Length: 391
Image: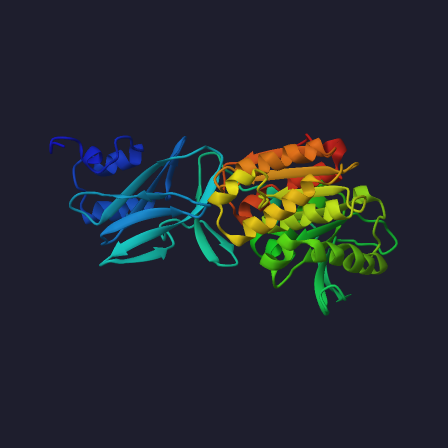
């Protein structure tokens, strides 16, 4: 590598955004030029097909760690003579992913947020930085827009199945009429959907816009989702024989299966589909996001975590089950999460068992904001079949 090469090439940036080219065009930029660049540019610098990340600080090595299943670590390149580190990644337009920076100093690694990037996303384990690629827009219906707000109530459910009394939150739409008739959506990890996926705001807006009918939503939450959801038998019994009768007694709910929906992400999708097959004819709608399924038994060797083997046993049982008539299912995945092929196989599996399936994929990971962004399409598919291709 010869020293007469352009600085960007020597910094590992054979292709570059014009703003980066301008910064590096005169050689190693002085500190005040770096200050000005960081002050006047949104980071990461996004363009069609690429995103450029910038880190400033002393370090032995800097990597971008994508928070997806088996996600790669992408090394930054230090600009010679500076404390500036740059990474240009090829990306798909219209997508997003979450990440942290791995900063290595003196043999130690620290995973930190990208403080140059204001975009964040939370989950039960904390926050990640978010890269929004060219053309991505957060759905307008997920942001407050003045729509009438629903309210939350708590119902108490005595559960002989689990030997305890559980309290579940229930969302009631604005203007709820106890003399009306409402569809029911049972949402696994519902409190997390509220906290991390803007569920309440999204439901308010979708109902107000007429995208979905006014619904009652039961927000199911368990302290042991890793144990309860993949085993599924007791959980299904709890939903159908204990929770559902309480909801039917307290609220004005439709008794038609087509007006009952199970929704879940990850292991919540496993619990949803298990319940539907164990109690056919009770729920006519399934919204399954990023389901932790393995239909190909040969892939189990690459998934050592015990939860995958638990769900694999469930999958084998479902493969012996019969058809699931008069059911609509929305199956969604993120291309970056490591479960995309499994979700495609799940969609085919359900179609072969008589389910009317809509499958969608996004350039995203196993994240709450991905599941948020898919909410409108999923609920419209199962609740508004006459409008399924609109919007």
